[in-house]
Amino acid sequence: MEGASGEVPAGHEPEGDEARAGDRHGGGVSKRLYVKTYGCQMNAYDSGRLTDLLSVHGYAATADPADADLIVLNTCHIREKAAEKVYSELGRLKQLKNRQGQAATFVVAGCVAQAEGDELVARAPVVDVVVGPQCYQRLPELLDRRRREGRAIVATEFPPEPKFDDLATPAAGAGAVTAFLTVQEGCDKFCSFCVVPYTRGAEYSRPVAEVLAEARVYAEAGVREITLLGQNVNCYHGEGPDRVEWGLGRLIEALAKIDGVARIRYTTSYPADMDEELIAAHRDIPELMPYLHLPVQSGSDRILKAMNRRHSAGDYLRLVERLRRARPDLALSSDFIVGYPGESDDDFGATCRLVEDVGFAQSFSFKYSPRPGTPASLEPQLGEDIKSERLVHLQALLAAQQQAFNAACVGRELPVLFERAGRWPGQLVGRSPYLQPVHARLDATAIGEVRTVRITGGGQNSLAGEACHEEAVAS
Image (tube, rainbow, N blue to C red; front, side, top):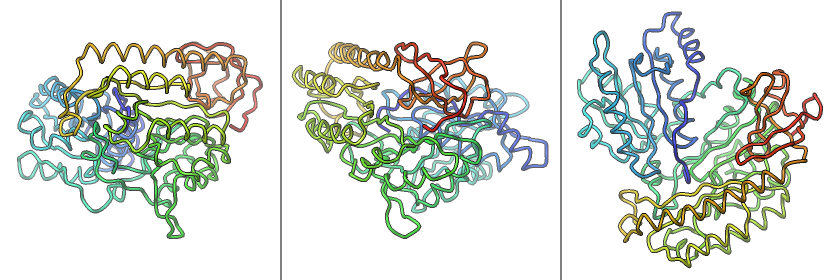
């Protein structure tokens, strides 16, 4: 997924998993599962499904690896040195392998598993199973094979059957107000800097009925906001109940009709796949939030061509104009790569001009880092000092835009979906339509509701406000 970085918590709170596993096994839970998730929201979603899949086989989640019988590292390959971080983590945890009393089983899953394959086992003998993103549904079988055969098992093929067919719909965490829902996976674009087509495979869209069924499960559990996930989510083309292919716009229209779903978001988008139906959805469907993550990567046509992006800077600007005509209050975020091989001062200047022309509410920017096996990794690389200097300049520009956008919200009344208690007594934290965290003093009964809040202050990363009235309002 473009712009993914960092680590996110595994999908569910331990208490919820322990309860589910205990119910399914008549009480006593004998095995513990620790999942560490790296990277994007899709990995977090996958970790949740793995957790639920393994709970059926008697595993209850734990937050402590020292307490685990099974340790799963669900990895991401987007950022530089991703594989080395995994090897480092395995080295840190390997003392749990042969401890007295019980021996932990180690699984490496995700995109690093897909990219490294047998090399993972060769370099880290502590690993028992290596499983790529398309084989998650086979993990219980792979663990059984490991026990029977007494050797490490590697499963990184791309099987013909979709993995979603055999992965149960993940249960929402207790009290969850928001949820991720993967609707599309894989990529056919082959940007010259990106490993996703090699680690996630070809583009695949889940059938409409399957997506709607999962969304209903979430809504019945109290989820009010659903974020649709995909490597190129707006290329979604799932089979509808009418046997006709649906695009993302039509899918969103159907999701908006589900009782309880107050808000819909989607990420990550590819500019060339933004069709008229989806633009119209931004105009016509109030449940679709007016905030869009639309990665451009560069403002230089020469660099965009080298990246094998299927748009020019002008194409991107015209698309932004069409979107804003459809939804005047739309806010945008984006991804940028600086220091791409061959990027000149003029190329970087074009990126800064595009940023100034568009005006972003928030964005993510990174120094180019070579990903093994990608075309760009074979090109002459720019010096780290040049990359760092450009990144500092661009991030200052983007931060100023984010601060200006937040400041412009002060004095406005915004609908806020409250998600949890804040740091201080009587304080709740929610999200604005533009995904900004909003802090306000409200009774805890407002959690899970959309309340109108008058914004009284805006910082770099969050807003403060006061409730205008106590009744829940439509978003």
